[in-house]
Length: 271
Length: 254
Image (cartoon, rainbow over all chains, first blue to last red; front, side, top):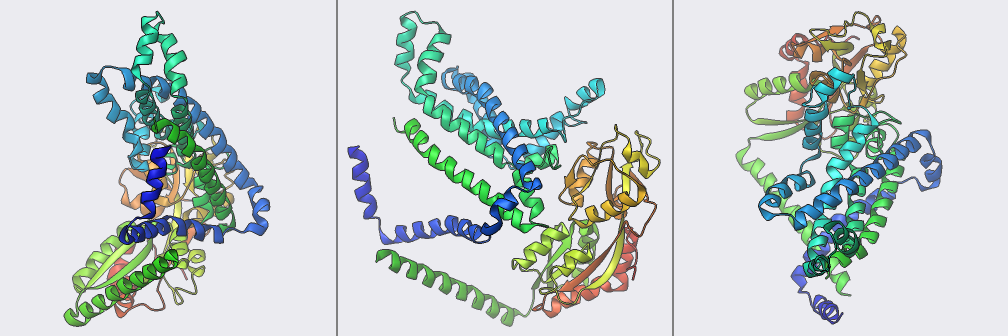
């Protein structure tokens, strides 16, 4: 607490050069968002938000992003735990691979998924030839894309959270006879709770916002694979009112997510 | 108080740099009298031909540097409306072009094209007629309705009585083509010129070629330089028309 007060005082003495750059930095981010808000047709907002095309996109986005986030948690929690506490000789190689989609251009993610699961893909070809099933153009493809681009966020944040908790607590529990599973569920995971929440929300938000990879792997069909970002892109060329309405909804989600994350991220990283 | 000062200072700095950049380039242009740059916005379906045409144009006009931005016509029209610095706009549809009548006042038609049903040369799904698209085991896609290739596809499909729905409505023709070429779909509605450009594709015409057709127009912005006008004139010239026709385009229909 005392530390924070001290920091607040120094920031008010920020030198004018830095303050100017900070101000420019603020406007670079804030002005486009403000500009977007000026074009939203507020008077017909609800009418447009309730139109069939917007509702369909909303439904696809909400359903797929939530399922993606749940899968990301189910698979990402064990993975983050392994990266935090597993043998360094192995985690050193696994970590960069798992985190890579975070910084990969979405189109590359899309091609990667297509190369594996497409009808001519490494696994996809085999599945298609034996069962007739092909993943592209299905809602499942949207979910898989969401997991691919979202789970790295969860793993990144949660691994840090696991690392921040003192390993002595886990060791003490183990010495007292708690088996590893119990140590994980009763000590490690509860202590990393805010990291888990922050990671899950980030993974969900990332899945919700994905555009390029989804378009490439899943295509864009209203009610099946067309998510809100794709609906914005499509509407921008025909029905701009709804493009701005959907944008405003996504912006609102982003702001809520950020406020929510702030407290959880601070809890995770201020130990 | 401090905030107000800072805002004023920011505006000052921004305007100063803005001015100096302008005057620098003006000085350069006056001094060296070379390297005029023009920016051309062209429909995605013109990717190959316009790349070729601009190369030839560059040979004949070494002092003009042409930069082309390819995308769906509707996207480009929207960008132009928002003030994107296009000196020349080549659109795949009349509707996209007429939506920017203020910015691009005098477009001329320079070619026409039509959508066809494209499929791999080996034809594994044995596509013989447009009605084959109604088969449930056939996966096919097209452009989104507001994109020229999608609008033409909608019309042609309706005339032929195709009632099945595509698996995806893609944002532009290149995206449709990519999925056909990677084998993710059995067939796709693309332009005849796309089939011309890909040796491993075959095509099937719609019964009514007129409803499948789209006409291409090109024009310069109001403030366009002589270089931009020269480029448009070059696209309308005999040698460009030759490139367009050998790529599968037709001469302008009307």
